[in-house]
Length: 152
Image (cartoon, rainbow, N blue to C red; front, side):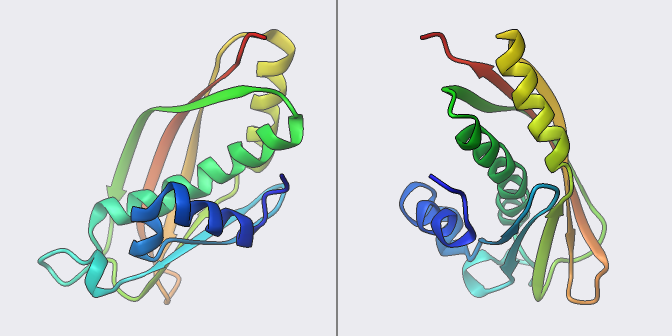
């Protein structure tokens, strides 16, 4: 299956409903960049009138996981993927529309190719940064992804 924003968002509706109902949407995925956005709304707010940190985390993880999903699908191989670790930094109150951007698509492709060629598990830290409508960074997430070729 080709990973497109429409197909990925439909997948999210059925398999990740909490992200979909929170407003997380994939907008763009290329070989190098993935963009996901989420708008601050009543359903994803915290008591401080800004976006709940976990909603930002879902959107940020989506930018990294979409890259992995895309490359695994393109490889045609049976590869498992798992978040092994993550860190986050919050720099500004998240209100309005927040756009998360990951630009490590080439590194993800190399990771999948290495997992296939060696047959060993591989890990990679992948970063996603969230920006508000004024293009000011509001948060930064890093996810350590582990991938492994499944035995036949």
